[in-house]
Image 1 (cartoon, rainbow, N blue to C red):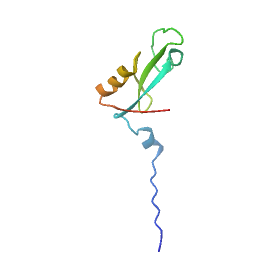
Image 2 (tube, helix red, strand yellow):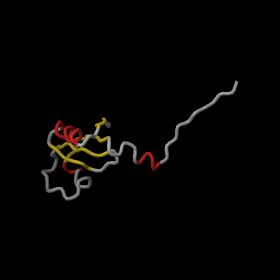
Image 3 (tube, rainbow, N blue to C red):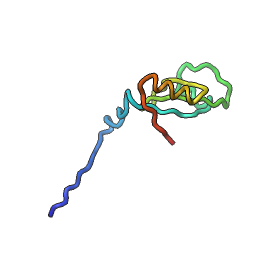
Image 4 (cartoon, one colour):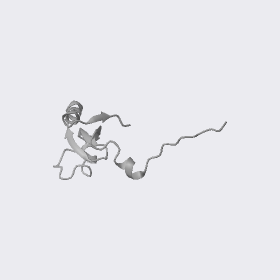
Length: 85
């Protein structure tokens, strides 16, 4: 009897758009790491910890001093948040 093997494959282009418009992630970051992610960000005291909400593709959406507000921002934009490590 022959064995049939199924492989799911995804192209790099498909992977790049996975979750687009529906998935976001929340990440705690220090102010020193935010400048490259949030263009036009005003000066923030070094070492300040903030919560950033990013789209699935890494595009910044919002910045908050409270994790709950960042998650609320995801829900307000009909985005499901996922955990990253």
